[in-house]
Amino acid sequence: VQLQASGGGLVQAGGSLRLSCVASGLTFSRTALAWFRQAPGKERELAAAISRSGSSTSYSDSVLGRFTISRDNSKKMVILQMNNLKPEDTAVYYCAAKSTILTYFPVRPDEYDYWGEGTQVTVSS
Image (cartoon, rainbow, N blue to C red; front, side, top):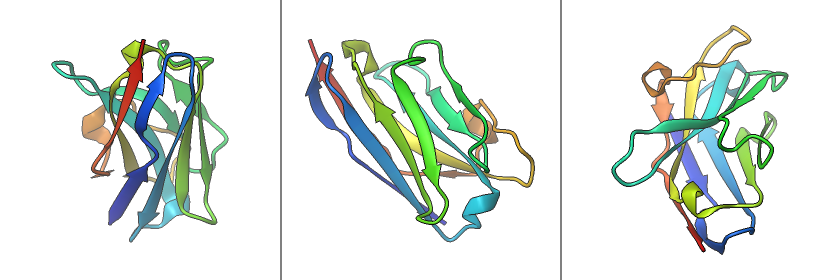
């Protein structure tokens, strides 16, 4: 199983970035997906998650209303659209996958089966 994330970079506060993560080696339609982030000196935290069908999503309070998670099962891709970025959004962003037949998504990092390598997002003030 591989998760390949891309789309990170340097952006000014108020700007936007689009992260994408392409999966291979798993049954994508039976996979819950999430984006976590980890800032220096902090624990890894959930930014957004989406159920295997895409019908349910969840966001942390800190990104609600600014970030949107979506998935394209035909392309085996999960996307995180990040708008109105703030300096506190600076972190390494990781995509994660959980094999499941249920319509739910875990919220703890240790509940996910597979991880991408991460992509750096830096927001300047």
